[in-house]
Image (cartoon, rainbow, N blue to C red; front, side, top):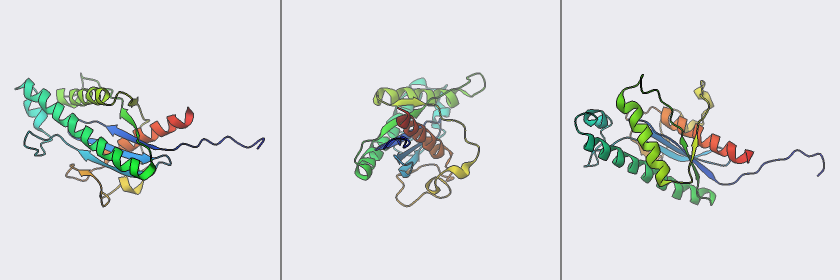
Length: 188
């Protein structure tokens, strides 16, 4: 129809990942920005027990344990992302595109593991998911913009809830990444 505005229709799903030294948020959304599922995962020891401060403890004393711990943490994130891909494909019929928050840091102002762990995790995820895009979402000042699934207590059926204080900041940042990824798809 002549004169009608162009409307971009996107289909599919998008997974955003916000890597952190102690907690990593992962959220998958559909093409309309609705949350499909997600979670927060933290580093575990070789016995599978949650130990978010473990990487700090071995950073200087045992570099090999540190590297092994970061590898194990990265694989836990991969496991969560892969579980979300199955759920998203069932919900939308599409395997989600993956976005990883582009990690910027100032190593002069941050403790060693605070910048090194996320940087190593981003590199590991980029190797595991070569088609993933690095995304730098705009900062958000007003958390009321987030869907209700990302505020307050975790919804029933939420995959991972490792963060014991029920803070949702990494999941909210992961939603920002997934939303930016979806917006970039519309712009293409």
